[in-house]
Image (cartoon, rainbow over all chains, first blue to last red; front, side, top):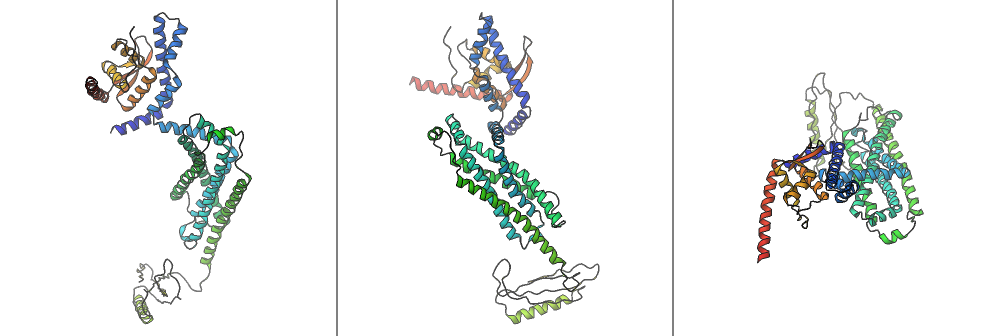
Length: 384
Length: 108
């Protein structure tokens, strides 16, 4: 009960933040004035009275800070500060930020574009595509991580200074996490745009309209968010772990450090190139796969496929050939007597592995076709 | 003028609640009343008063309202809530139990 109340009270404080800040300042200046007046009435010169009051009051900024912490969730205030600091520090190196955001956008965006192709068109090739998508994402994350690592290496002096000034290591880790979260969030946003563009490429150039989910799929948006958060934590923690073992004194003594050496930079470039190549492959591959499937549907089978229903069945291991033939003939006869069926037939499929498991030995497939009259419901076909 | 004592750790809330139980008053007033009530023996540090006020307001023990002082100046007046009254009773009991225990130990 009181917890809920406290929650809403804090929410209200957050909403009326500016007003409350002003009130806090007013309240404290009232206090200062009152004490000054008291001293003046006791006979002190105004200047001295004011100074004494201020001395006694202490550091007003610090006091306000402590009051603020009492009022809202301290973590919220700190998050706000971390966010502001993170955005400022990213803005200081726009080249790095833009690269990292683009890399993420490319990785997540191509995934989004491929995922928005209707699943049924992809059923057979989904596994392959998923693998490529996974690789693109992993390479993307590895890219951003290595960029961040390189950046951290060049910022070791800054971190060493902040640690020396009394910042907790946990605080710095959080700072890095917030920074990578900002990058990931921006990357995720850009990925949505890039994904939309990718979908347009699929629709316009590969003429896949109708096979794409219109609008933004909620599952894709969720996927996007999950990937963003996961990659941010992963990518943020790696450099954090690295500097948590930082030797302050030796780092501060070194004037300038260039730890991001040539070989690492070469690796970074290779990773970026690999990711771009893979992303393009992914987009083109997805489009071509679907185009092929679409073409297959247009192939003339030599008969009228309308009102045709097919079913598959498989026998368990150990059922003899004679028994299979007998059971198939019985089933066919039963199908032919169904109302609305004009004709039915079956064929034996060759041997081979069944999709999804090898528990069937030398499987047999039977296909049964029948035609129903107008207005009649399709009878349920069953397969054993 | 006698020697001024710093507050014993953990008693600030109780003392502030005690002052507010008599009347609603602003932050400056709280320091004044506390000095009067203790016959100038207690010195209340502003640096701890205001965080405590905000904390107690947050817990719902006290409520704040902007009103005019006798001198016509706008000030933030604090008043005890029902939860604050309950809290005062709790802290009073804790305090007397603790002083009794300490007294017993010291006199043994």
